[in-house]
Length: 415
Ligand code: HEM
Image (cartoon, rainbow, N blue to C red; front, side, top):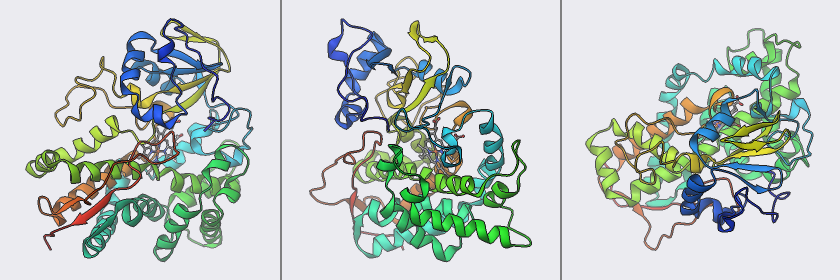
Protein backbone atom coordinates (compact mmCIF):
# COMPACT_ATOMS: atom_id res chain seq x y z
CA UNK A 1 0.00 0.00 0.00
CA UNK A 2 1.95 2.93 -1.27
CA UNK A 3 4.76 2.04 1.09
CA UNK A 4 7.73 1.67 -1.22
CA UNK A 5 7.51 5.21 -2.48
CA UNK A 6 7.73 6.71 0.95
CA UNK A 7 10.36 4.66 2.68
CA UNK A 8 13.32 6.59 3.96
CA UNK A 9 12.39 10.26 3.62
CA UNK A 10 11.46 11.43 7.07
CA UNK A 11 10.57 14.69 8.70
CA UNK A 12 7.89 15.87 11.09
CA UNK A 13 5.98 19.13 11.24
CA UNK A 14 7.25 19.38 14.77
CA UNK A 15 10.93 19.69 14.02
CA UNK A 16 11.89 19.94 17.68
CA UNK A 17 10.73 16.37 18.17
CA UNK A 18 13.02 14.37 15.92
CA UNK A 19 12.63 11.29 18.09
CA UNK A 20 8.94 11.27 17.18
CA UNK A 21 9.64 10.47 13.53
CA UNK A 22 7.27 7.63 12.77
CA UNK A 23 7.21 5.42 9.70
CA UNK A 24 3.82 3.72 9.32
CA UNK A 25 5.23 1.42 6.63
CA UNK A 26 7.66 -0.21 9.02
CA UNK A 27 5.84 -3.17 10.64
CA UNK A 28 8.05 -3.06 13.73
CA UNK A 29 7.06 0.54 14.32
CA UNK A 30 3.35 0.29 13.56
CA UNK A 31 2.78 -2.64 15.88
CA UNK A 32 4.93 -1.79 18.83
CA UNK A 33 5.22 2.02 18.98
CA UNK A 34 2.27 2.59 21.28
CA UNK A 35 4.26 4.83 23.65
CA UNK A 36 5.59 6.89 20.78
CA UNK A 37 2.08 7.23 19.34
CA UNK A 38 0.81 8.39 22.75
CA UNK A 39 3.48 11.14 22.71
CA UNK A 40 2.53 12.03 19.14
CA UNK A 41 -1.09 12.44 20.21
CA UNK A 42 0.09 14.90 22.86
CA UNK A 43 2.91 16.70 21.02
CA UNK A 44 2.30 16.51 17.26
CA UNK A 45 -1.12 14.97 16.58
CA UNK A 46 -0.96 15.90 12.89
CA UNK A 47 2.51 15.17 11.54
CA UNK A 48 4.22 14.98 8.17
CA UNK A 49 6.47 11.90 8.36
CA UNK A 50 7.31 12.16 4.63
CA UNK A 51 6.99 14.86 2.03
CA UNK A 52 3.34 15.35 0.98
CA UNK A 53 2.26 12.69 3.46
CA UNK A 54 0.35 13.46 6.63
CA UNK A 55 -0.29 11.17 9.59
CA UNK A 56 -3.22 11.78 11.97
CA UNK A 57 -2.66 10.27 15.41
CA UNK A 58 -5.81 11.43 17.19
CA UNK A 59 -9.37 10.19 17.07
CA UNK A 60 -11.13 13.42 16.00
CA UNK A 61 -8.78 14.25 13.12
CA UNK A 62 -8.81 10.67 11.83
CA UNK A 63 -12.61 10.45 11.98
CA UNK A 64 -12.95 13.85 10.25
CA UNK A 65 -10.84 12.66 7.31
CA UNK A 66 -12.90 9.46 7.04
CA UNK A 67 -16.21 11.26 7.07
CA UNK A 68 -15.55 14.45 5.10
CA UNK A 69 -15.85 13.44 1.45
CA UNK A 70 -15.87 17.09 0.37
CA UNK A 71 -12.30 17.68 1.53
CA UNK A 72 -10.81 14.19 1.29
CA UNK A 73 -11.23 11.48 -1.33
CA UNK A 74 -9.54 8.44 -2.80
CA UNK A 75 -8.41 10.09 -6.00
CA UNK A 76 -7.03 8.34 -9.10
CA UNK A 77 -4.71 5.91 -7.29
CA UNK A 78 -7.33 4.56 -4.93
CA UNK A 79 -5.61 2.70 -2.12
CA UNK A 80 -2.67 1.72 -4.33
CA UNK A 81 0.73 3.20 -5.04
CA UNK A 82 0.61 6.95 -5.78
CA UNK A 83 0.73 7.57 -9.51
CA UNK A 84 -1.22 4.38 -10.36
CA UNK A 85 -4.26 5.24 -12.42
CA UNK A 86 -6.71 2.43 -11.65
CA UNK A 87 -9.34 1.88 -14.42
CA UNK A 88 -12.89 2.37 -13.14
CA UNK A 89 -13.96 -1.28 -13.68
CA UNK A 90 -10.94 -2.45 -11.70
CA UNK A 91 -11.63 -0.36 -8.62
CA UNK A 92 -12.77 -1.84 -5.35
CA UNK A 93 -15.82 -0.14 -3.84
CA UNK A 94 -13.66 1.64 -1.29
CA UNK A 95 -11.66 3.23 -4.10
CA UNK A 96 -14.62 4.78 -5.89
CA UNK A 97 -15.51 8.38 -5.14
CA UNK A 98 -18.76 10.25 -5.78
CA UNK A 99 -20.70 10.62 -8.00
CA UNK A 100 -20.55 6.82 -8.64
CA UNK A 101 -19.93 5.53 -5.10
CA UNK A 102 -23.32 6.26 -3.43
CA UNK A 103 -25.37 4.39 -6.08
CA UNK A 104 -23.07 1.36 -6.06
CA UNK A 105 -23.02 1.25 -2.30
CA UNK A 106 -26.80 1.51 -2.09
CA UNK A 107 -27.34 -1.48 -4.36
CA UNK A 108 -24.91 -3.63 -2.37
CA UNK A 109 -25.87 -2.38 1.08
CA UNK A 110 -29.31 -4.06 0.96
CA UNK A 111 -27.52 -7.43 1.28
CA UNK A 112 -25.31 -6.35 4.19
CA UNK A 113 -27.79 -4.95 6.71
CA UNK A 114 -28.02 -6.16 10.36
CA UNK A 115 -31.05 -8.27 9.32
CA UNK A 116 -29.06 -9.85 6.47
CA UNK A 117 -26.25 -10.72 8.90
CA UNK A 118 -28.79 -12.24 11.27
CA UNK A 119 -30.24 -14.34 8.45
CA UNK A 120 -26.72 -15.66 7.82
CA UNK A 121 -26.25 -16.74 11.43
CA UNK A 122 -27.57 -20.35 11.19
CA UNK A 123 -25.24 -21.18 8.28
CA UNK A 124 -22.36 -19.47 10.11
CA UNK A 125 -23.01 -21.36 13.34
CA UNK A 126 -23.13 -24.71 11.57
CA UNK A 127 -19.87 -23.86 9.76
CA UNK A 128 -18.15 -22.85 13.02
CA UNK A 129 -19.35 -25.97 14.84
CA UNK A 130 -17.99 -28.23 12.13
CA UNK A 131 -14.65 -26.40 12.09
CA UNK A 132 -14.21 -26.43 15.87
CA UNK A 133 -15.23 -30.07 16.15
CA UNK A 134 -12.59 -30.94 13.54
CA UNK A 135 -10.03 -29.00 15.58
CA UNK A 136 -11.07 -30.87 18.73
CA UNK A 137 -10.86 -34.27 17.00
CA UNK A 138 -7.33 -33.43 15.86
CA UNK A 139 -6.39 -32.60 19.48
CA UNK A 140 -5.67 -28.99 18.45
CA UNK A 141 -3.68 -27.35 15.69
CA UNK A 142 -2.81 -24.06 14.14
CA UNK A 143 -5.98 -21.99 14.24
CA UNK A 144 -5.41 -19.77 11.22
CA UNK A 145 -4.60 -22.56 8.87
CA UNK A 146 -7.30 -24.88 10.08
CA UNK A 147 -10.07 -22.37 10.60
CA UNK A 148 -9.80 -18.57 10.66
CA UNK A 149 -8.27 -18.02 7.22
CA UNK A 150 -11.10 -19.87 5.55
CA UNK A 151 -14.13 -19.10 7.68
CA UNK A 152 -14.83 -15.42 6.80
CA UNK A 153 -14.37 -16.01 3.07
CA UNK A 154 -16.68 -19.02 3.20
CA UNK A 155 -19.42 -16.99 4.84
CA UNK A 156 -19.11 -14.17 2.32
CA UNK A 157 -19.15 -16.73 -0.51
CA UNK A 158 -22.39 -18.08 0.95
CA UNK A 159 -23.87 -14.56 1.16
CA UNK A 160 -22.90 -14.10 -2.49
CA UNK A 161 -24.87 -17.23 -3.36
CA UNK A 162 -21.83 -19.20 -4.53
CA UNK A 163 -22.72 -22.91 -4.83
CA UNK A 164 -22.09 -24.61 -1.47
CA UNK A 165 -20.05 -27.37 -3.11
CA UNK A 166 -17.59 -24.74 -4.42
CA UNK A 167 -17.12 -22.89 -1.17
CA UNK A 168 -14.36 -25.07 0.26
CA UNK A 169 -12.18 -25.00 -2.86
CA UNK A 170 -12.93 -21.34 -3.43
CA UNK A 171 -11.79 -20.36 0.05
CA UNK A 172 -8.62 -22.43 -0.27
CA UNK A 173 -7.83 -20.79 -3.62
CA UNK A 174 -8.37 -17.41 -2.07
CA UNK A 175 -5.89 -18.04 0.70
CA UNK A 176 -3.34 -19.65 -1.62
CA UNK A 177 -3.31 -17.53 -4.67
CA UNK A 178 -3.84 -13.92 -3.82
CA UNK A 179 -1.02 -11.74 -5.08
CA UNK A 180 -1.97 -8.62 -3.18
CA UNK A 181 1.52 -7.15 -3.43
CA UNK A 182 1.48 -6.73 -7.24
CA UNK A 183 -2.17 -5.81 -7.11
CA UNK A 184 -1.66 -2.98 -4.66
CA UNK A 185 1.38 -1.70 -6.51
CA UNK A 186 -0.88 -1.33 -9.56
CA UNK A 187 1.13 -3.74 -11.72
CA UNK A 188 -1.69 -6.20 -12.32
CA UNK A 189 -5.48 -6.15 -12.30
CA UNK A 190 -8.11 -8.29 -10.59
CA UNK A 191 -8.01 -11.19 -13.09
CA UNK A 192 -4.23 -11.60 -12.83
CA UNK A 193 -4.07 -11.06 -9.08
CA UNK A 194 -6.98 -13.38 -8.27
CA UNK A 195 -7.34 -15.75 -11.26
CA UNK A 196 -9.38 -18.51 -9.64
CA UNK A 197 -11.58 -16.13 -7.71
CA UNK A 198 -12.23 -14.19 -10.88
CA UNK A 199 -13.22 -17.44 -12.60
CA UNK A 200 -15.74 -18.22 -9.84
CA UNK A 201 -17.06 -14.67 -10.10
CA UNK A 202 -17.42 -15.03 -13.89
CA UNK A 203 -19.25 -18.32 -13.52
CA UNK A 204 -21.66 -16.76 -11.02
CA UNK A 205 -22.27 -13.85 -13.39
CA UNK A 206 -22.89 -16.15 -16.38
CA UNK A 207 -25.29 -18.26 -14.36
CA UNK A 208 -27.39 -15.25 -13.44
CA UNK A 209 -27.34 -13.80 -16.94
CA UNK A 210 -28.59 -17.12 -18.32
CA UNK A 211 -31.29 -17.72 -15.69
CA UNK A 212 -34.93 -16.91 -16.39
CA UNK A 213 -35.42 -16.13 -12.75
CA UNK A 214 -32.07 -15.28 -11.19
CA UNK A 215 -31.93 -15.37 -7.37
CA UNK A 216 -32.53 -12.14 -5.46
CA UNK A 217 -28.95 -11.69 -4.36
CA UNK A 218 -26.18 -9.13 -4.54
CA UNK A 219 -24.70 -10.46 -7.79
CA UNK A 220 -28.06 -10.30 -9.56
CA UNK A 221 -28.54 -6.79 -8.16
CA UNK A 222 -25.17 -5.76 -9.59
CA UNK A 223 -26.18 -7.00 -13.04
CA UNK A 224 -29.74 -5.72 -13.18
CA UNK A 225 -29.85 -2.41 -11.30
CA UNK A 226 -30.08 0.70 -13.43
CA UNK A 227 -27.35 3.06 -12.32
CA UNK A 228 -26.93 6.64 -13.49
CA UNK A 229 -24.61 5.68 -16.33
CA UNK A 230 -26.58 2.53 -17.25
CA UNK A 231 -26.08 -1.11 -16.16
CA UNK A 232 -22.86 -2.19 -14.50
CA UNK A 233 -20.24 -3.69 -16.84
CA UNK A 234 -19.57 -7.38 -16.09
CA UNK A 235 -15.88 -6.53 -15.47
CA UNK A 236 -16.96 -4.26 -12.65
CA UNK A 237 -19.32 -6.87 -11.21
CA UNK A 238 -16.40 -9.33 -11.21
CA UNK A 239 -14.17 -6.79 -9.43
CA UNK A 240 -16.78 -6.10 -6.77
CA UNK A 241 -17.38 -9.82 -6.15
CA UNK A 242 -13.64 -10.33 -5.69
CA UNK A 243 -13.66 -7.21 -3.49
CA UNK A 244 -16.26 -8.69 -1.15
CA UNK A 245 -14.34 -11.96 -0.84
CA UNK A 246 -10.98 -10.22 -0.38
CA UNK A 247 -12.47 -7.65 2.03
CA UNK A 248 -13.61 -10.44 4.34
CA UNK A 249 -10.04 -11.51 5.04
CA UNK A 250 -9.67 -8.63 7.53
CA UNK A 251 -11.91 -10.60 9.87
CA UNK A 252 -9.26 -13.30 10.27
CA UNK A 253 -7.08 -11.05 12.44
CA UNK A 254 -9.95 -10.33 14.83
CA UNK A 255 -10.80 -14.03 15.13
CA UNK A 256 -7.15 -14.81 15.87
CA UNK A 257 -6.79 -11.97 18.38
CA UNK A 258 -9.88 -13.21 20.21
CA UNK A 259 -8.99 -16.90 20.25
CA UNK A 260 -5.47 -16.01 21.41
CA UNK A 261 -6.92 -13.97 24.29
CA UNK A 262 -9.36 -16.72 25.20
CA UNK A 263 -6.64 -19.37 25.28
CA UNK A 264 -4.13 -17.21 27.17
CA UNK A 265 -6.18 -15.22 29.67
CA UNK A 266 -8.23 -17.23 32.18
CA UNK A 267 -9.82 -14.03 33.57
CA UNK A 268 -11.14 -13.13 30.13
CA UNK A 269 -12.54 -16.62 29.63
CA UNK A 270 -14.21 -16.58 33.07
CA UNK A 271 -15.75 -13.14 32.43
CA UNK A 272 -17.34 -14.31 29.17
CA UNK A 273 -18.58 -17.52 30.76
CA UNK A 274 -20.08 -15.53 33.63
CA UNK A 275 -22.02 -13.21 31.35
CA UNK A 276 -22.53 -14.14 27.72
CA UNK A 277 -23.70 -10.57 26.99
CA UNK A 278 -20.05 -9.59 27.34
CA UNK A 279 -19.15 -11.54 24.19
CA UNK A 280 -20.34 -8.78 21.86
CA UNK A 281 -18.40 -6.27 23.96
CA UNK A 282 -15.28 -8.39 23.79
CA UNK A 283 -15.52 -8.32 20.00
CA UNK A 284 -15.76 -4.51 20.00
CA UNK A 285 -12.94 -4.11 22.48
CA UNK A 286 -10.68 -6.38 20.45
CA UNK A 287 -11.51 -4.38 17.33
CA UNK A 288 -10.67 -1.15 19.19
CA UNK A 289 -7.41 -2.24 20.79
CA UNK A 290 -6.25 -4.65 18.08
CA UNK A 291 -7.64 -3.25 14.82
CA UNK A 292 -7.02 -5.63 11.90
CA UNK A 293 -6.41 -2.62 9.65
CA UNK A 294 -4.00 -0.26 11.41
CA UNK A 295 -4.41 2.72 9.10
CA UNK A 296 -5.92 3.86 5.80
CA UNK A 297 -5.40 6.60 3.24
CA UNK A 298 -7.12 9.50 1.59
CA UNK A 299 -6.00 12.39 -0.55
CA UNK A 300 -6.77 16.08 0.04
CA UNK A 301 -9.15 17.40 -2.62
CA UNK A 302 -8.56 21.05 -1.69
CA UNK A 303 -6.17 23.14 0.42
CA UNK A 304 -7.40 22.73 3.97
CA UNK A 305 -6.21 22.13 7.54
CA UNK A 306 -6.36 19.51 10.27
CA UNK A 307 -6.15 20.76 13.85
CA UNK A 308 -4.50 23.94 12.56
CA UNK A 309 -1.86 22.17 10.44
CA UNK A 310 -2.14 23.25 6.78
CA UNK A 311 -2.87 20.42 4.35
CA UNK A 312 -2.33 21.02 0.65
CA UNK A 313 -4.43 19.76 -2.25
CA UNK A 314 -3.05 16.43 -3.50
CA UNK A 315 -1.30 15.50 -0.24
CA UNK A 316 -1.90 12.00 1.05
CA UNK A 317 -3.39 11.54 4.50
CA UNK A 318 -2.81 8.43 6.57
CA UNK A 319 -5.49 8.00 9.23
CA UNK A 320 -3.87 6.22 12.16
CA UNK A 321 -6.76 3.95 13.17
CA UNK A 322 -4.66 2.08 15.74
CA UNK A 323 -3.54 5.30 17.40
CA UNK A 324 -6.96 6.99 17.20
CA UNK A 325 -8.56 4.00 18.92
CA UNK A 326 -6.23 4.57 21.90
CA UNK A 327 -6.81 8.32 22.14
CA UNK A 328 -6.94 9.02 25.87
CA UNK A 329 -9.18 12.05 25.25
CA UNK A 330 -11.82 9.64 23.96
CA UNK A 331 -11.22 6.43 25.94
CA UNK A 332 -10.71 5.98 29.65
CA UNK A 333 -7.61 3.81 30.31
CA UNK A 334 -7.26 3.63 26.57
CA UNK A 335 -4.37 1.15 26.52
CA UNK A 336 -6.29 -1.46 28.51
CA UNK A 337 -8.60 -4.21 27.26
CA UNK A 338 -11.80 -3.53 29.22
CA UNK A 339 -15.23 -5.10 29.01
CA UNK A 340 -16.93 -2.33 31.00
CA UNK A 341 -16.68 0.61 28.61
CA UNK A 342 -19.71 2.92 28.57
CA UNK A 343 -20.48 6.20 26.81
CA UNK A 344 -17.31 6.15 24.72
CA UNK A 345 -17.35 6.65 20.96
CA UNK A 346 -17.25 3.76 18.53
CA UNK A 347 -13.75 2.79 17.40
CA UNK A 348 -12.57 3.58 13.87
CA UNK A 349 -11.64 0.01 12.96
CA UNK A 350 -14.39 -0.22 10.35
CA UNK A 351 -13.75 3.33 9.16
CA UNK A 352 -16.47 5.98 9.40
CA UNK A 353 -18.90 7.81 7.13
CA UNK A 354 -19.47 7.17 3.44
CA UNK A 355 -17.07 4.22 3.13
CA UNK A 356 -17.86 2.55 6.47
CA UNK A 357 -17.10 -1.15 6.08
CA UNK A 358 -19.88 -2.91 4.24
CA UNK A 359 -19.16 -6.16 6.10
CA UNK A 360 -19.41 -4.64 9.58
CA UNK A 361 -22.50 -6.60 10.70
CA UNK A 362 -21.31 -9.81 9.14
CA UNK A 363 -17.84 -9.55 10.72
CA UNK A 364 -19.28 -8.81 14.17
CA UNK A 365 -21.71 -11.72 13.92
CA UNK A 366 -18.95 -14.11 12.81
CA UNK A 367 -16.68 -13.16 15.72
CA UNK A 368 -19.51 -13.41 18.26
CA UNK A 369 -20.71 -16.79 16.98
CA UNK A 370 -17.14 -18.11 17.04
CA UNK A 371 -16.72 -17.11 20.70
CA UNK A 372 -20.10 -18.57 21.66
CA UNK A 373 -19.27 -21.87 20.02
CA UNK A 374 -15.79 -21.99 21.55
CA UNK A 375 -17.30 -21.53 25.02
CA UNK A 376 -19.88 -24.23 24.30
CA UNK A 377 -17.49 -26.84 22.95
CA UNK A 378 -14.60 -26.41 25.38
CA UNK A 379 -15.00 -26.43 29.18
CA UNK A 380 -12.90 -23.95 31.20
CA UNK A 381 -9.26 -24.54 30.27
CA UNK A 382 -10.21 -27.16 27.64
CA UNK A 383 -8.49 -25.12 24.95
CA UNK A 384 -4.98 -23.78 25.56
CA UNK A 385 -1.94 -22.42 23.77
CA UNK A 386 0.46 -25.19 22.76
CA UNK A 387 3.45 -25.63 25.09
CA UNK A 388 6.31 -23.35 24.00
CA UNK A 389 4.02 -21.15 21.89
CA UNK A 390 5.47 -17.69 21.27
CA UNK A 391 3.38 -14.78 20.03
CA UNK A 392 4.66 -13.27 16.76
CA UNK A 393 2.96 -10.73 14.52
CA UNK A 394 2.09 -11.67 10.94
CA UNK A 395 5.39 -11.26 9.15
CA UNK A 396 6.04 -8.62 6.54
CA UNK A 397 2.67 -6.96 6.68
CA UNK A 398 2.81 -3.40 8.00
CA UNK A 399 -0.95 -2.96 7.95
CA UNK A 400 -2.38 -5.97 9.79
CA UNK A 401 -2.41 -6.34 13.55
CA UNK A 402 -2.77 -9.94 14.61
CA UNK A 403 -0.76 -13.06 15.44
CA UNK A 404 1.07 -14.95 12.72
CA UNK A 405 -0.10 -18.26 14.16
CA UNK A 406 -2.14 -19.44 17.13
CA UNK A 407 -1.05 -22.97 18.04
CA UNK A 408 -3.68 -24.63 20.21
CA UNK A 409 -4.06 -27.86 22.15
CA UNK A 410 -7.40 -29.35 23.11
CA UNK A 411 -7.46 -31.19 26.43
CA UNK A 412 -11.20 -31.60 26.95
CA UNK A 413 -14.51 -31.01 25.20
CA UNK A 414 -18.11 -30.90 26.34
CA UNK A 415 -19.43 -33.19 23.63
C1 HEM B 1 -13.07 -7.33 11.27
C2 HEM B 1 -13.30 -7.35 9.96
C3 HEM B 1 -13.20 -6.16 9.06
C4 HEM B 1 -12.52 -4.98 9.22
C5 HEM B 1 -11.67 -4.53 10.40
C6 HEM B 1 -12.78 -4.17 8.04
C7 HEM B 1 -12.28 -2.90 7.84
C8 HEM B 1 -12.74 -2.02 6.87
C9 HEM B 1 -12.44 -0.62 6.82
C10 HEM B 1 -11.57 0.14 7.81
C11 HEM B 1 -13.09 -0.09 5.73
C12 HEM B 1 -13.14 1.37 5.32
C13 HEM B 1 -12.30 1.67 4.12
C14 HEM B 1 -12.12 3.16 3.89
O1 HEM B 1 -12.79 4.00 4.49
O2 HEM B 1 -11.24 3.49 3.10
C15 HEM B 1 -13.76 -1.20 5.09
C16 HEM B 1 -14.50 -1.08 3.93
C17 HEM B 1 -15.07 -2.15 3.28
N1 HEM B 1 -15.15 -3.45 3.74
FE1 HEM B 1 -14.45 -4.15 5.49
N2 HEM B 1 -13.59 -4.88 7.19
C18 HEM B 1 -13.88 -6.09 7.78
C19 HEM B 1 -14.70 -7.07 7.26
C20 HEM B 1 -15.30 -7.03 6.03
C21 HEM B 1 -16.11 -8.07 5.45
C22 HEM B 1 -16.49 -9.38 6.15
C23 HEM B 1 -16.47 -7.65 4.19
C24 HEM B 1 -17.30 -8.34 3.15
C25 HEM B 1 -18.37 -8.99 3.36
C26 HEM B 1 -15.91 -6.33 4.00
C27 HEM B 1 -16.08 -5.55 2.85
C28 HEM B 1 -15.78 -4.21 2.79
C29 HEM B 1 -16.14 -3.36 1.65
C30 HEM B 1 -16.85 -3.79 0.38
C31 HEM B 1 -15.69 -2.07 1.96
C32 HEM B 1 -15.83 -0.80 1.10
C33 HEM B 1 -17.04 0.00 1.56
C34 HEM B 1 -17.21 1.31 0.79
O3 HEM B 1 -16.23 1.86 0.32
O4 HEM B 1 -18.35 1.79 0.71
N3 HEM B 1 -15.22 -5.99 5.14
N4 HEM B 1 -13.56 -2.37 5.81
